[in-house]
Image (cartoon, rainbow, N blue to C red):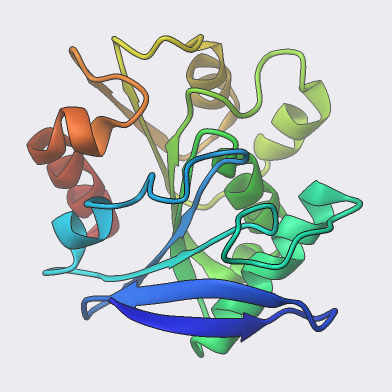
Length: 196
């Protein structure tokens, strides 16, 4: 995996890395979250796609201090996209990273080819404003969730109801990190979605 230093629009340095070749898939992790949460995922997909991962500001590899975390994460994601020279990319959001990916797609739909949402967090029925905005999002979206995730599946249910161009794959026995708990099924679902 080749590491990069991305300079955000406010001059902060963000850690990023890429692996593989093909169409780009940018991974958005939840926060707070272990910085190694995507270990193994890049390797799982890198034979078929160019996987780009980056750390949000509260991670030790990226600069801290984000007063408006949501808006800042969207701006940082755009800095990552620009750094890698991507006119558009697919986004995979995990846990609270689903919020970043969705809000980025809502702000920049022309820069997002498709979405993969792995909730276990993210918008739920109480986030009515975001869900209402999602109803107008035409980016093809895949939701992947596991039946054994200890977190509520309400976010996945809410997204499935709100998004107009959505498919959902439920992985029996998989939990919050389905690429670890069910790598074959998870990888197949994501790659099939990206190749549409």
